[in-house]
Structure formats: structure tokens, C-alpha cells
Length: 320
Image (cartoon, rainbow, N blue to C red):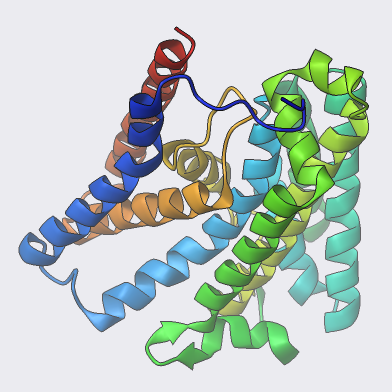
């Protein structure tokens, strides 16, 4: 077996449960909510779910690359989404704002990748630091100002245009998912990423450049943050340094709940998407039930713990 071919699970039943269980749970959740939660099965609520899920989902797609690379996570996504959104409205020129957003976020991604992939620094510490520095500078330079204004051009269509009853922003999530799927499943970069996460030493022995590959994963995460920032800004026509608070938590939750292994080496964009939908539906149900944000965080955190425990159990059974 080639190092660039991810190892198949030794426990088909456990693997099947991990891969398809979340689909069944999500379908059951939708059915129960439609029958018992007032206001859930309405067109306006479905639109709201997609509006809320799309930006987080795009971030989660980028996070998937980082997690698969070697059980790393990217906590700088909150700052990067905010940077992209604020640049869009604060610069005064749409094109320049987009260029600056891309340039700054890619720079953050490169710094993260070099520090984590090449220098082998702790990913949590590094991304927490780069995110904190970036967000601190953004807050200082903007003085915490809230920027208002309709985003022009194609970006504006993300949040204002609908195809039938579905917002176009949902289409941007699908486009990013297709691109992510192609990179992860049909390119040498994607296979290298998975092999690196499965067995770093063996991957490097086979010629995979660990530092460069991990840096690529963080840059992909940064580019997804840029698109998410544009989508979020186009929906609300506002941007502020705190606009993406909680995105790191929600995106990571979607990646893990979808069945991607937090231990690296295993995962897919499809799994992340179902995780995004599941988390969005759970949050929506809690809102419709009138529960506070604290309860939403508590429930989401509990779901993450359960998903991580299931992942660890699946790995343990599969390695027997």
C-alpha cells in the first residue's frame, strides 16, 4: 500500500457508524423538529438557517484541511473573517478592500503554517497568538468602529440574491465545498495532507514536504476565512472587529461532529458539510425554543465532547 493512500479502517462496522451515523441523526432531528418545534418548518426559517450556516460552513471547510493535516486546529479564523469583512467596507474601494483582505489573511496563514508545520510549534498557541495579535491590531486601528454600507458588485449578491427561496450565499458554500472536495480528494496536495496526518514520518520518507504541505493547509483555511468574511458582510451590510466571534468554536464543532478525525489523517468535505448542517439546525432549534446563547454554547460543547469520544472509541476499535 502506498503511503499516499490513507489506511482503511480495520473495523468496518465502527467506520460505517462514524461515517453515516451523523446523516441518520440529522435526518431524525429535522423530522422531530418539523413536527414539534413551532416555526421550524417555514420558508423564512430555512432561509435563516442557510444565512447563519453558510459563513461558518465556509470557515469549517478550511478548518477541515488543517485538522486532517496532523490533528492541528486554527484558532485565528475569528480574526481573519473579521479582517476580510472590515477591509471590504472600511477602505472605500471594493477592489482594494478585497485585495487587502486576501493579502493580510494569506500572510496570517503563511505565518501559522511556517510556525506549526516547519518549526513544529504548538498549533493552538501559535494560532491563538496570531489571531489575538491580528484582532487586537484590527480593533485598535478601527477603534472598534462599526462600518455600514451596501457592498457593491458580485459580493453584494451573496447576501441579497435568492434562487427560489434559497439565498445565493448557500450557493457560495456549495462552490467552496466543491473546490475543497477537489483539492482534498483529487490532487497530490490532498493525498499528501491525509498521509501526513496518518503517519508523518512515513509521509516524509515517501517525499512529502511536511512544512510546505501544512502551510498550504493553513493558507487554504485563510482563503476560506476571506470568503466567509465577504459572505457575512454581504448578508448584514455591516462589519466590525467582533463580527465573527465564536466562529472558531462553531467551525471546529462542525468538522468534528461531521465525523472528521481530530487525530488527523481522515476526513472529507462531505462530512464537514453534514456537520455544518447539524450544528446549524441544533442552534436554530434552541433559538426557536427561546434558550439563551449560553445554553447554545453548552449544548454545542456537549455535542463536541460526545463526537470526540466517539472518534477516539472508533480509532480504538479500528486498531484492534
